[in-house]
Image (tube, rainbow, N blue to C red; front, top):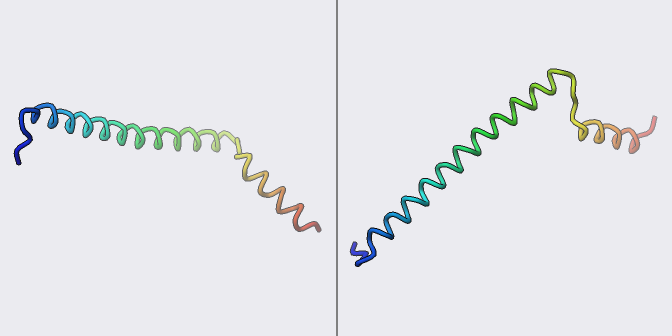
Length: 65
């Protein structure tokens, strides 16, 4: 495969893109694990998700006793 006189630039560009994608993927994995730990810590301290309470409240309104 002949990339012509700009082969160094083209290959360097692909290398930079590969590094950026790898860094973003690693950051997403790290941040996802960090957010999960923070959420588990909050739930262990007794904090609950508002969406669960809101869902329960909407169920109670839909099915009054």
